[in-house]
Length: 502
Ligand code: NAP
Image (cartoon, rainbow, N blue to C red; front, side, top):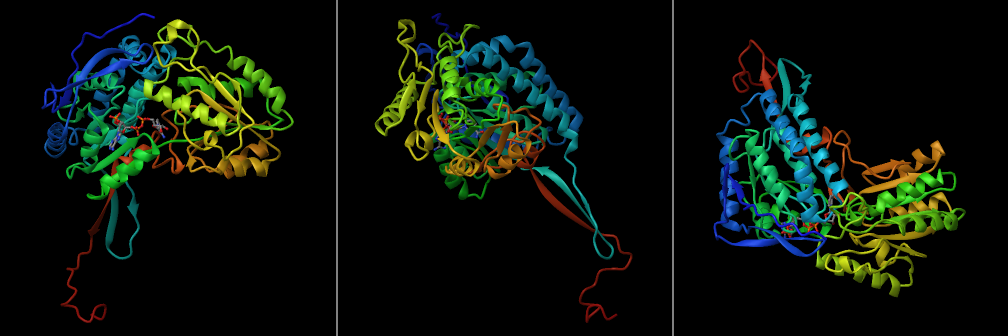
């Protein structure tokens, strides 16, 4: 497998300047396909957080961004989208090198990130308020105003796209930003920072810090000058973010984990359901928060479905993610690889049947990287660890069901509520289930997709708030109510005592 090392020197982006960490320290970042170091990035600390927050504060309080016309903000955001498209291939390769996702998926992520900037550029002039009828001579209206400084903390599974989902709506609303990418995948977020500067987003509006979550992320979440926190990551880290933000009563939105069900009824188009279910679990090597990790099969089609499904899953080409022909890459890190393998061991010891995979591929070339074969467990019970905890790898649990009530009960029996898929050609059943399943994103006869137009987020412990769509603007604006006295007569509460009698 070809080794590529980036020779570029990466820097933090603070107040429009590309700078090293105050400590001068750096940390390595790796290629998950080979575990070789591909670059070093600055290791920010609390001092850098203070500098970045001060720059974002100044840019919000004094800078031109919030005062610009919405059209002018939109123009610059569209320029970000244009540059992303111009540099699509280069950025996609960097994404694949750093996070291991196959190049086809990285290209799609860069294109989707550009679309996200365009989508929110189109909404800059659409954050209007209401006029509210009042009794008497009062006139009342609301305006939507940006929060101010937004701290944004993102994970490693969609490094650029998660940055775009957060940065674009925050910018559209006129906020300023301190963004912290995951330590495993810092590179494309830093590139996005360069692009924002090139697109004439004013200095201090977008600041980017790379460094350990427990220090940099925590300092952002606690900082008194940060008005809002938007976090995507594990549910456990989300709890910590809530605790850290509590001291200053920050506005918090969270996109967290999932254990999403994928339900196949006997009246579905089974070939399409097999193909869609493969996509729903094995894309991005299973490292999607919305991965449909629990496949519920009706008992009447269970065996037939599985034989087709397992045969096709066994043919997924695992290998070098930079090759167009490769269909599945490695998981993010050695640690994650060991974690996934330990879940596999646990599933076997709890009595699930290993029907496919369950190990690292034998191919010698892949031994250096964090590859795991597509893995399928059958005869899973919904209360087993493998069916309840988020694995974040290419591992599927198959569970048999008898009827609609039973499957709804099992599908909902998890702490999560992020997504769900239903395969059926019975229109009434499809909508009945869509309403009974407790998840923020339900797809019918389609595996999973998150276009910018549609809201995205979780029920239960999968999150707070909705990203994407117009709803994301609610995450980045607050409502101000304004009441105006239009009366000719002078207001005089005490002079006209008793009130209402003169
Ligand atoms: P993670 O460990 O929770 O980390 C996410 C981010 O939080 C990283 O930038 C991390 O920095 C930072 N962080 C870690 N500890 C922190 C702390 N104490 N205070 C503040 N920040 C802290 O999640 P991950 O492993 O990167 O990502 C996988 C998870 O993300 C999965 O659970 C997945 O379901 C979830 N996810 C959810 C969605 C959604 O929209 N619902 C989308 C994608 C992913 P370091 O990297 O430096 O530790």
